[in-house]
Image (cartoon, rainbow, N blue to C red):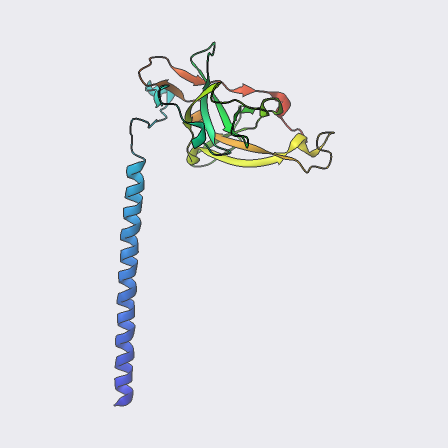
Length: 213
């Protein structure tokens, strides 16, 4: 009898543990769903939202208006941004740039318009900061930051300066950041709220930035 009672007690305890685990899983799923919904809510369109559209759709994306520029103090090192030079001779041109350690922004350049890599959702192009553009970079008095690119259209890597050869880096200790930006961003068509001008990114191509070894 004692053995039978012990088995029944053990079985009931096991059932209770299973029920408790099921309740916790259900609670976790509900919490996770709520978190995703909350995050989606904050990513929903607003007056500062922008949307990349296919060029052929004839619908341009929207960027922050110039009277609401992004404060440099809100930027982080390695942020990739869309910016426009103040007093530019080409008002329909915007550029890619990255935030440097000194808080200024340096323009990004590439050596090829071919893809660096592709995935099911991204077609990434690669960029670096040309040494001639690195210091001191551009301040808020020289440019207006229109947008900080989201992490789903930006990636990072590194490569040896000069390919790890030459007088500037003979032992290959020095490296530089490689910035990967989705082609949809690079080839996108944009507009500023309240302005009919169509803006496009002016991509700087410098074949000297390519490493052949």
